[in-house]
Amino acid sequence: MPPKVTNKQKAGQVRIIAGQCRGRRISFPAVVGLRPTGDRLRETLFNWLAAEIRGAHCLDFFAGSGALGLEAASRGAAKVTLLEYHHAAARALNDNIERLGLKSVRVFNDDALNWLHHRDLDARPFDIIFLDPPFDSTLLASAVAVLARQTTLLAADAMIYIEAPARQTLDFIPASWQLHRHKTAGDVTCHLYRVPADPLTN
Image (cartoon, rainbow, N blue to C red; front, side, top):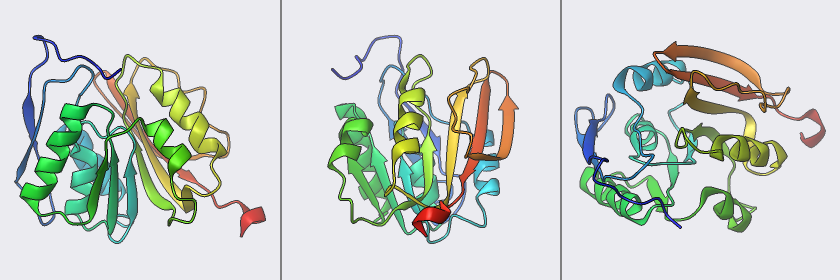
């Protein structure tokens, strides 16, 4: 069942840093585990992706507030898919997309791993995937395991961004994923991996 909303959680807003929606704010509801990526880390990430983002097909695996996926769309990504399990958060994402006029973005109110099983195998693979699940869950390891088995989801030399608690050991990352960038800010760490094309499939 979806995460519960509690009185301890607070609704909030984050601003889009750059691109066509620069300075605009997106709202998100009070949902347990929903923790938008901060401005500084987002700015760092999209500086890393500056040469990759325009025209890219992006997947925000645990969209939450939509801070990563909507930032990507604002900066010129050709298509952005947002996966969000919680109904209230998914509704807020659709509201933000409509208000911002971002026609390149689509929201699926579904469990991310379940969505993969029903995805059109002939759909274009993703160039960039964002993985930023709730920190107190085991979803990150599960998502990485699924992505490692995918043959149609990732484009050649796809980029995968992971945000996790600094204390977490990422010993489940496949050996074939190449660490491209890394940064720790307080109790949060972020990694950007490149997944090399498999020569056997090209």
